[in-house]
Length: 301
Picture 1 (cartoon, rainbow, N blue to C red):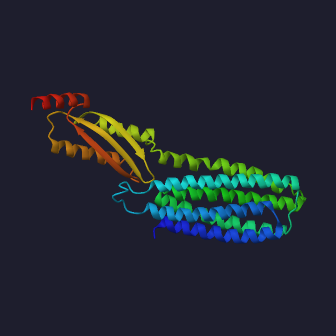
Picture 2 (tube, rainbow, N blue to C red):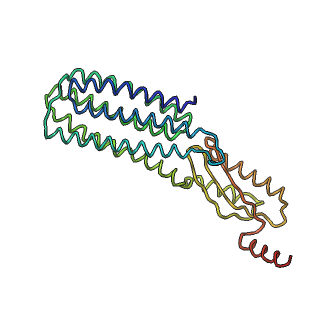
Picture 3 (spheres, rainbow, N blue to C red):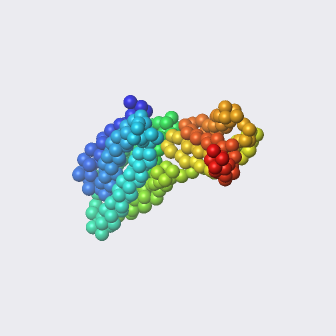
């Protein structure tokens, strides 16, 4: 089993433990903060399970039906995780507003504080581990998980702080107010997930700095007289480039082939952390001239 899938198993196991602990404490305390945190952990659990199967599918070898692997499913998983985060944030917001008007009090305050301390430290360790895995694999699903749990760490910290404040002041409405703020923050922070996942699903081009470097390589190749139809797109692990290279008319095909490979090797060195899929079309003329040449040749045959 690879490192990415191991990470999803670890994160789902941690989420399941936190769900059980938080639900028990919520039944004892009736704290909206603990309940909201338990719901968030429950969603984390199901998302991590989904991510495990998404990564398993993405690792399948390319075949006759999927010539370019199945790795866009990682972007789809990231998109799904954003929807889950949005749903949990909206639910937490609703429950917090509801409690403002019902004005119910928290019982078993000490127990709630202890469970949030436990949750804070466990989730912090999980974020450290997920960030380590992401730096090793550059996997978008793991990055999404790390960002998601990072918001959990922040939420757990502020829940802990405000539970202590409530214990000292007896001002129980703080429990709802702080979760309204956290719900808004969680919803806002999730936009990075949807944006990056959307870009991958829509085959967005490489960054301008990378495209400029590709153009510089092509401009500096003396055996290439010009180029056109330069197109790029990026996936989780691979950068795709297609381009038409125009050679001097008398260039032999074997030489043009060697030169195109040299150009491709230079482009791959732009980012050695990514795989590159480069398709270079070798033209003896610019396309418009080449079309006229082909037509005249056909008429004379």
